[in-house]
Image (cartoon, rainbow, N blue to C red; front, top):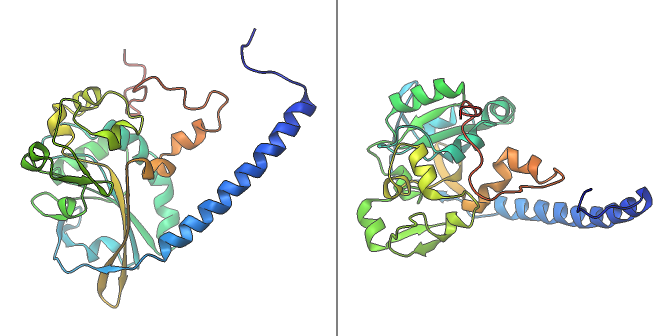
Length: 261
């Protein structure tokens, strides 16, 4: 016998209609937030960033691939990682389905990580992905957009992530901004990337939006931590499942690691 509240179809419908009003309000609020994102001032990019890609060495403008808008997913894959972050991997599993639609709406979606291109290409092949993925190794791009930090920054507590300063690195490593995200034990994530906690947490997830007009690249928007929830497709489905997220820790794996013990 279930312990969950039960009722008649009439009672269910009454409760559902009440919930529907709240859902509609959330949708209207979401539309308003999207409008406010688009009204943010654009900031011109003066620095000459370079990336290694399947097409060779390219500029930030080249990542647009002839379109006027670029969405960059800051994928946690540092130079010392043996494999990509499992959480970023779960998010990226949906990219291939979206890329073609975005490309036909003047938007390029690309991942960027600090790992060398050869590592990214090998992992991409393992995962069966085809979306664009460039390496920013050796450059300032990840640091300037607050998704990578140095060991010195980590040790001294001069890290800014998700628009606030984090304290100096402690044994739990990743800090409140990601721990609250429900990603589970950080040490387990670190192990899944073949690194220790300190090394793992020197990379952070995020999304940045850019626009190209008259040959000038502008930064339009960035979001981090829980700001990525809406892009994590499996969670959008779980939020509509009868038991919701129903989490007690890290339960997900890379899609090729399920049923392996």
